Length: 609
Ligand code: ADP
Ligand code: MG
Image: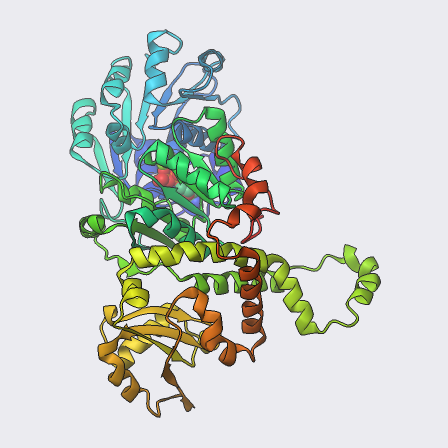
């Protein structure tokens, strides 16, 4: 099916080509012909990200008369962000329609300016219910002649308590208009609206009503409530290219988490209703430009944000209404891309996971917060990757002779190490601090590490396979579990390094491990497992197996060097991070919680471009 076959006019087809839409989405295919050919009411149910805006936008644009200055179309949407987004889309769709005037009406901006815009002859008004009602009562808009009324994200508008406002607004519209209701879900309230305000509506459903996007995988991480923030940072650090929305329950938490992240050197920003419109616009702009990698948001403020490429949705806290989870996870996995929805839960909330699983009809994978050492490796490899893929800037060529002279006695290995240390040591030192916290966090939070470092019945093993053999902590754990026929909880603190790894089991399995791994071969190579003196505490690691085994390898050697440096400069104190952070703190505190762009203060990664 092509857009042409749906019956759209040339000017709209041109805009569609300009935007690069190849073919209509399912909801568009179903809704557009009906809305073009009939003057009917319509209820359309389709997931977030399925292209609902164009499904009502194109027909409305084709049907209105741009020669007239009368307001003919009204689109109600729950939030300012959405309102602006829809307005933008409509302007894009209608950019070849001469004389088209689409006006956005929303709270938090000058009402006089908006009234002026309307007066110029807005054929289409896109509005939030609150401000719309306000403008009607002040007679700043006239919707008595509208022909088309869209209730977009109807479920969310009702969630937000806009029922009375909508009722009030609709009472100022003519009876013979067409009402088009678009919603991701169909709760009772929405069907009440449909019954009350619509006449024999046609119905369109795309996919299962509450089905969550299939390209999204769902994971949860069990931590102590007080370790939530540390867990969040680890998840971010373990994913250097993260581009995410972090959901909090309240405006206060949202602001606080964003501030903390910024203070800790992340490219983060806050989005919630207590910010001024201007602040919110700035944050959204930075997010779209990917200057912000972690957008911390409330459900209401984030509703409908249409930013593609979001890699992770992080549920810092679960929503009060578990149905809201679908809206959250729908922010990622858009446009056929894969996405991950992560949930940080405390023990008391694990039951909620089960309820969500029932709603989304999918199972969560229980995962463990990566260890500090694993995160360091990820970061280091990410840096190596970045350098490897960097295009050479030949402006440097004239200076090369001088630089070469400086390094005439430096070997390639040494040069690489130095080069990496410039960025990585800073990260590593910083991370040492996190590790101190994590040891504490591990001791108190995850069952695994309870058994690992403080459980006297735990045994730590060394195994001579690691990353270079293609393992990560998860796959090694799987391998060990299968090989040893142990349960998921019998193996813990699996730390994979470059050429070797560690893991813990209960003492009870000691003989079994020894037996299974006697003369054990994989692909013709002996896999050697020994009891390690390393107790699984981070600080012991460099001194244990690491040095004698890994010292041969340059990367491990480098890591140990970094660790020594880190230890010397940091001393035993826990809060020595402040030295590194003091400069950043002052600059990142400014403003509303939008991203700190200071490159120098960021120990872990450089900004995305
Ligand atoms: P919804 O309202 O259902 O959540 P949107 O209308 O916001 O979805 O559309 C999601 C994204 O998909 C937007 O970036 C939009 O420009 C894009 N889009 C919509 N229709 C198409 C299409 N037919 N082909 C490609 N992209 C589309
Ligand atoms: Mg939408």
